[in-house]
Every structure is written in C-alpha cells, then in structure tokens.
Amino acid sequence: METGLAGRAVLVTGATANIGRGIAIAFAQEGARVIIVGRDEAQGARVVEKALKSGAAAAHWVAADVTRPEDVQALLAKAEAACGPVDVLVNNVGGNVDVGPFVETGYDAWRADIDITLMSTLLVTRAFLPGMMARGWGRIINIGSMSGIIGDPYLAVYSAAKAAVHGFTKVLAAEVGHAGVTVNAVAPYATSPDDPDEPISTGSRRYPGSGVFVTLAPEKAALLQSIFRQGLTQQSRAKASQIGAATVYLASEAAAFVTGEVHCVDGGRRLA
Image 1 (cartoon, rainbow, N blue to C red):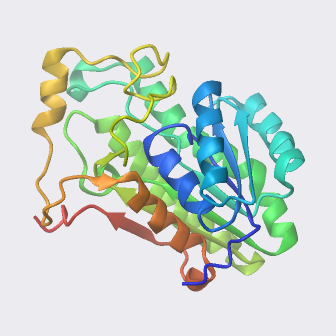
Image 2 (cartoon, rainbow, N blue to C red; image 1 turned 60 degrees about the horizontal axis):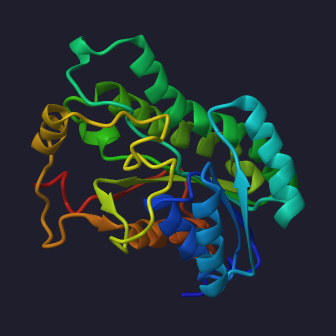
C-alpha cells in the first residue's frame, strides 16, 4: 500500500517505550521524518538510531513533559526547527498512575491520570493544530484505550479520561475536517513491546523510578491482573508494531476519507 507518508514530518509523544516506540518505527519504515518525544535521552537516542536504520528520512529526539504547557510550546518550536512543519501528530502519552477501587483513591491520583492522559492530548493538539489548518493538510491520531469503551474496574479515572480522549477525537474531527485535517483514535487493549529485551525508558510505567507511575504492590498487581479479559485470538496481547500499523493507516492517503473514528485493536475483547 502506498501511504503517501514519505518525507512527511511525524511527531509521536511518549515515543521512547512500547507503543510510542512501535509507532515511531512504523512511520520510519514509511520514510517519514520522525520526531521522537520523551523524557529519557538515552532511550530517545536508541529509538532515533533504530528509526534511521528502519528507513526514516530523518529522526530527532526532543525532550518534553507534555503535561506542562511551557514544555509543549517549546516542543512546537523545537520540532519545527528539526523537521519543519508537523504534518502528522500522534498523541500517545497516557496511562494510569495507580490501580485500586475508586472509593480508595483521591484527588492527586485523579489529577495525575487526567493530566497525563487527557490534558497532554489537549495541550499538544492545541499547539500543532493551527499550523495544520493553515496549511490545509494534517493528520491527528490519538491513542485511546479499550478502557475508554468497555471500562475497567480499578481504573475508573483512567477509563474516564480515555473515554474523554475518544469524545474529543470525534468533536475535533467535526470542527476541522473542512480545513483538510482528519482526526482519529486507536484504542488498544493490552500491548507489549515487540522485543521483550527492549531497554526500559525512564518514562515507562515499567521503570520503577519514572516519577509518574506508582510501582504496584503485589496486591495491586493482582487486582490489575484480575481484570484481564480473554479475547478471540490466539495472541493475548497486541504487539507495539501492530498499533503502529493501525496508526500509519489512519495517517495515510488510504484513510483520507476516514475521520472521527475510534479504531479498536483489541483482539475481539468487546465480543468475548
């Protein structure tokens, strides 16, 4: 399939681990110019190297905490200096900072879930959208979650924030379609890196000192495992590259007539 993405400038937030890394490499394989956004310089350098080996026309790592408005404004300037105007924006940053029954949670955890999952998407989109509209072409892909569709016990606020990402996707698509910008979302269920030995980014939930995600106590880890749903396929989890492939499709010319959609990559969890 000819995607029309060769030479396009693509920015992926949270691109130093798992899903974001898989997305960045998928665009690199299409010959795009890839901007890898994250907080881990060493892992960012590794992803840049892999992107270039995978066929990227260019690849740059840019440090940013996309929950901070000042970082996002700086990101706009740095991204355009590195690769020119951004054509494709992938809002991948998100996550649940803790696990537990809602009645046992509090404001700080709610705020953190909303900031990292919803506010980051709003901030980055608001920064890059005007340029896309002015140029008459753009693709925005938000990484949602099946949690925002089916709801996950012990992840109440995260599920609510991802549902909000899906709702924002649909409304924004209606507002900006006239300007040549499509807006879609990808909703994964559970995803693992293609390479189980992939170094762990300091921004990843798997990194014990991320500064964002709580290291789960055994009882909380058991709670999280208890909500896992079996799907309809032999494969129990998506590979990061499969999320990347779905994202590339939504950014491609083949999907120019697709907007306002939430594309589920869930192994049939909704039907199981």
